[in-house]
Structure formats: structure tokens, C-alpha cells
Amino acid sequence: MFHTEIGQDIHKAKALLLEDSVVAIPTETVYGLAANALSEEAVVKIFAAKNRPFFDPLIVHTYSLDAMRKYVEDIPAKAIILLQQFSPGPITLLLKKKIIIPDLVTSGLDTVAMRIPNHPLTLSLLRELEFPLAAPSANPFGYISPTTAQHVADQLQGKIPYILDGGVATVGVESTIVGFEGEQPVVFRLGGLTIEKIERVIGKVQIRIQDSSNPAAPGMLSSHYAPIKKLRLVGEESHELEKLDKRRMGVIAFDKYIETISKENQILLSPKGDLSEAAKNLFAAMRRLDNSNVDLILAVHFPDIGLGRAINDRLKRASTT
Ligand code: TXA
Ligand code: MG
Image 1 (cartoon, protein in one colour):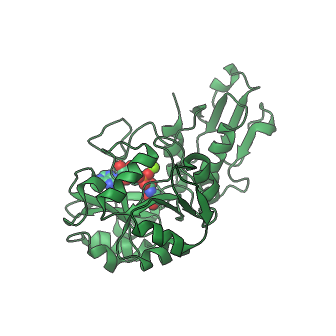
Image 2 (cartoon, rainbow, N blue to C red):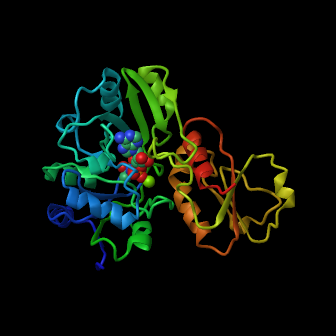
């Protein structure tokens, strides 16, 4: 057990990371649970703190393309373009790993997920370190990702010594994951960088989102980002609504209340209809309803464009039916 401290001291975070401890760090997407990616002894502690199965590989964080080159071989041309256009930012690239990256980080795969997070505190921390940071989202395995330091503390209190507090995550959903088959880009996880933006700079991409639990395609486990309460994803015009007991029901919707339900338990993620704002508020809303007295969380399907696609993906994975 640790006494978990929350603070903004990157030197304290650095000292802990140097001794192979795990520290929660802020990023623009969600908080991460970080440790020295080159130390198996440190990385194993991430899996332990999260209760994460070893077959689910981690993302390695660095501060620049040059720093990244120390850990990966021959980066495809389109990956370079994506990095130059969107990093630091909410994109992760699957690249051929160098031997220096331990197998524990990649679950034995020959690719490593690499990303440059766009958060000033974490970028300063990464520049201070001589090693990159392996960091999955800082939630217990399967639960909703944290977008504030307090969310991390709510669940990992006592399991880690330090949470670096960088405020509320500005993007709010995890990074978009892009891999390559030869030079052909494939999106494996919808996330904070939209497909539209990606296609504008590298052309058409394949989207291959796993929706079944399949350890051979790590990272895309179907039940994920889930609250403890039952969550149901419904269409905007859903007739299913009629049949449900609405008294103990909470709602997550985009910009309009469901008229037949009391507003008290409804959360609009963006009353002004802005998908970026909705993404930023998504996980906090799921947590709030999970901690409220509702029995069922109803989520209304979002428009399938821009960040709406990542939001729908998370809601689908969080839903029980
Ligand atoms: O925004 C983010 O990406 C956040 C912040 C902390 O950077 N991190 C994050 O990590 O979402 P995590 O571990 O919760 O999700 C990473 C996903 C996992 O589903 C994992 O299976 C997948 O990336 N992944 C990692 N390495 C992979 C690889 N070599 N091949 C395929 N998938 C991989
Ligand atoms: Mg995660």
C-alpha cells in the first residue's frame, strides 16, 4: 500500500520513475499509468496496479519523432506524415519495435504502439527522462478511463505513490491507433483524432475495429470502458424506451433531452452540439451516473461523424446488450 499523493511536481514524478515506480500522468486524451518502458521490473507494476492481463500490450510515450526513432525501425512514409501533422496529439502508431523494447510491453508482438502526448507537464517530464514511458489508461482493467486526477485517485488510491495532476483532459477519449500493412494504413481504434483528419493528409484508410473479445487482436476487447451499472445504447428514435421503467434511469445524450424522462438524471454532453465538447465530457458523465442512484444508464447514439464515431465506439463497448 502507498499513501497516494496528488501534485504537479515533475521532479517528484521523475524521482519515482527513476526507481521503477508507477506514476499516473496527464495526457490530452485520458490519464495514463506510467513506468519506465525499458525496465521490465517497472512495467510489470503497471499490469499489477491495473489488474491488466499480460496479453494486452501497452503504449510507449515519447516527446519527439527523433526520440521515437531510438525504439522503432523503418517508419513507413505515411506514419511520418501523420506524426509530423498530428503529433504531439491523440494518435498512436503501431511500428516495428527495436530489441530495446521489452516483450512484456508489446505482449510479444513485433510492433510497438508509440505516441507523443500533447500535454505540457507530461512533455516536460518526458524530456527530463532518458527512457520512454509505457502507459495504458490509468483505470482498473475494463473500467472507464480517467480524465481527471481525482478519477485516478478514486480507483487507484493506495496502489500508486503519485498522481501528476494536469487538470481535465482536453480531448477526453483515447488516441486513435493506426498500424500499417506494408505502406497501407489501418485504423485499429477510433479515438481523439478523427478519420476525416487522417484521410485529409494520407488518403483513404482501412478501418478494422475489433468488436469481439480476441486476444490475437489485442487492445480491442469488446467489453471495455464499462461502468458497473448496466448501460444501454439506443437510437434517437428508439421505441424501446416505451417499455422501460424511467424512474431509476440515467441518460447520456448529445444536445437534446429525452422528453419523456425527467431532466434530473439526464446529462447532455454538449448542449451546443459540439462533438469535441461531447467527447471531452463523455467519461466523466459515465462515472457520474455510475456513482448515482440510477439502475440503468441509457445512452443515445451520436452522429456517426468526426468524434461522434469514437464516442459511439466507447458507448458500444460500455453497453451490456
Ligand atoms: O490515449 C491513449 O492512447 C491513452 C493515453 C494514456 O496515452 N492510452 C491508452 O492505453 O489508451 P490503453 O492501454 O488503455 O490502450 C492501448 C491500446 C490497447 O488496447 C492495446 O491492446 C493496444 O493499444 N496496443 C498496444 N500495443 C499494440 C500493438 N503492438 N498492436 C496492437 N495493439 C496494440
Ligand atoms: Mg485503456
